[in-house]
Length: 237
Image (cartoon, rainbow, N blue to C red; front, side, top):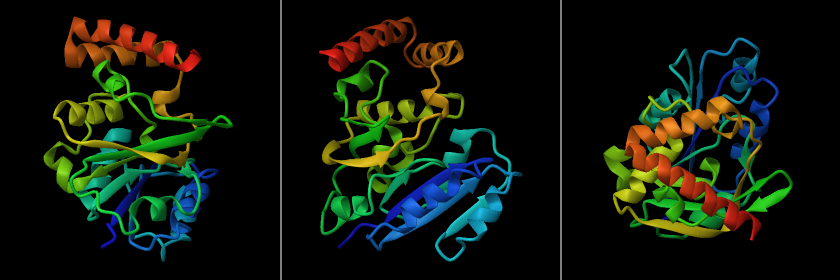
């Protein structure tokens, strides 16, 4: 039996990008999809574009929220699938066969997290080692991760205190709980970039170490520095 996949798109004032993402979801050649769009109360025409796809979208909510991870949690309350993926405005699946390649006639009922490669900046980025999670990093782009709703259970939520790195905190928490992860040998998403966690700025760097300190204390800051060294070694070796 083919798993039901809930795709959640979070958006806010993204009139130039939202169609790209919606088309990427609704043109998948896998039929057992639930599509949920959570909009933060856009005023630039985004809502009007989404309404043009009303026949293809199962749930559409447009109202103010308290940030991206609050919106993601809201999306999770509507999800009724076996698996969930967050494909946010401006990002897209790598091709129309991604979900078919992963879920058609496959049984991953004991796996908690599936992940794969990402196409970004004209290159395919393969996953990092899972040990990156231990040091406060992440093994794959958030758009290239699927979470098993029943296996992850009550742990499938984002801590909204993290403005930038709630996705890393969630995935790391699942990893430390010994939930099973499985890497898939395919490219899952095309990542546009420009999201909160991708901004290279003093504020984002500070937020990263705030996140590590809040979760692990001074040891987390040390882990973060060590993890960065491991990342650079893997990237440039």
